[in-house]
Length: 464
Image (tube, rainbow, N blue to C red; front, side):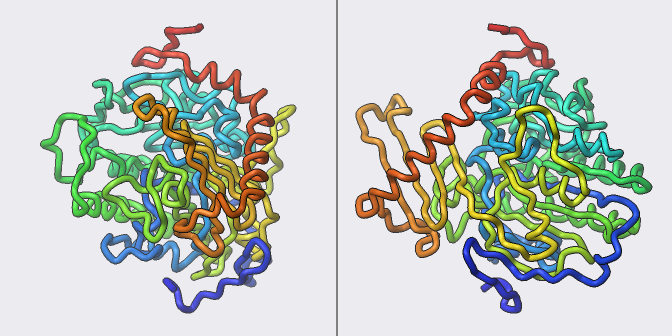
């Protein structure tokens, strides 16, 4: 066990006993601040707090020691863009039109203009809001952070860019200030932190929410001293280069925590840290099976750490099954704000604040996943996966592969029970089909908009 002193209570869905500190009884006069940190392609086994003995992540590990570590937290997709849309909207990403990865080559429009992000209700309640780093949910101006409730945005629209030249896979310069491309020298991991610290300092006298989506350790694998590599190239580095990038991100997380403490904000700030999907090579998803792009646990289960000194009891661990789409409703719950009231709009995610602050269990709910040829559903201990290789034109004629695992007994997904548990396969297949039918009326028009093409400065060029 990673933390021998921790106690995990497993009853029903599983919850951890978290004890409210006496100081929480007197609520602060000011609403809490929020720092939401998302790393890119960080694997379940990449952090010291999750068992790595290779990578050096002392600052993130400290977050875990001083907060709560989730062992069963799921990205809403095994790929970047859909998970980020789920984080922003609190809903399944298909509802916002995001069911694929937006790239610097295709330059598709992106997240629906009608999507409501967590920045909107927080800003309406008086919060300062900002995002610094990797946006990756669309290229159209209508999908820009400045049009989705964020007061300030600096960073990249694309998925992967050169960490120094900021050139994307399509050969375009991809570094923005709100709706305009601007040149800015520096290693992107450092720039993201610099802007975050400036924002915290400028807004320390009012409630704020800053979303910090680092690009690292996503390809191209470039360390802070690799500025002579001027091309984009989606190249993969060695395990040592990956470790160097991750260590640099960890240092930057330490800078954010130090700023919160220096400004006396650590007692009234919640910090959340997670990943958009499982690790790609050469990262680690140990002890889970699979990797980024797959629906096995290694592609979907990711680290999630919540930190709030004086609010969350230090050194706790929970096996409550949560997901990226839960962050939005959790922010509102902790801020004491109601959910958005737009007609017909509901959260798919749930408020995790009772788990964080009171140790209450989560109500059982299924989770559903879909990316290209992959379909998956989790309900109770059961996980169903269907992989249709016929989606790949090079694999025509191969049969659909179905898997069923009992995660309670087999978290490494080594024993396929699909043949012996056909009733469970049928139940989860039917549940997934029902879920798709439920979101279809909303997702279909959103997807049609998202697939439109834009030019390299964000204007729609294909309205069909």
